Length: 387
Image 1 (cartoon, rainbow, N blue to C red):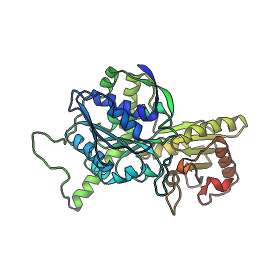
Image 2: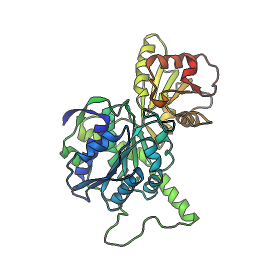
Image 3: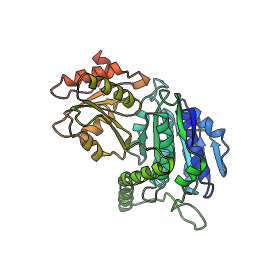
Image 4: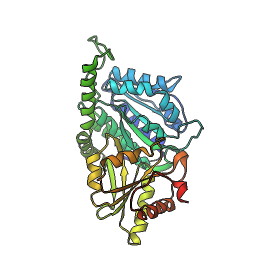
């Protein structure tokens, strides 16, 4: 185990490199890459690595990058790619293919606001656009969490009960280009944690087809299998956490991360780096005697509904901060939370940080003051409307 001072982009690339080397006893490692800000540093890091029995393929588009990953997984190789915003939209067709074919591709998404108008800073709308395609989605709040999430996503996605792709999401620039110390395991530890990959339906000596035409009852049957696989993620993830702790000697974050919730009457719910700021505000307001807590949603797909309900048992008011907007509706996370919250709970949506805008402690204090003044929920509120 060593310490590295690196960005979240490089942390993701390093984790993918170690995972790729760990499959040298299997069918190796292959990834397709195409540059896009703010994910390019991750791609460049991978291109600079020497991966035994592995290759990084530089392609002409994001669509082709995912196509390379699909081909690699079909051959039984471990695969990885990275992208952002409109690049993710361009590869969407092949994202559907990867999920439909049950290939455990791992992708890092440096969350960036969709354009036009063009903006290169953080927004969750890109990955949320694909939340219903059959990809496991994890949202990170720090560099160590990015590294651990990429590494553990391979163990999770490659489990025979799952065999689904996984997306590791991090806030563009806010996290992707932030330098921090992380603990990095040695290759032997990674080899122990990640056994050689075996894709049950990989191409080999016995000829068979992938992606054939289906009639209605076959589609229904396969969608049921996909849904059951996603439902199994929680149990498998719990096992992955235990193995991660045993081998890496540190904790792998839970699907939801509660903070001072035991008696919290008002709870701030968010994803990504906003969650870290929310915890600072909780500490500040607790010192003033307010019963405030925070809940960071780390796993959005599958949605850990039971865990969310459990952590909101004491809450009367919930402020959901979204770094996105579903136009004509409100925040995507708000819609998810509202669906699982108790019927008598006040669940108010606040839209903040879109386009990479700062969400600072005083902004969250304003949100808490606003929700505590309400008797019932209003329409989604854009943060600038509070100022």
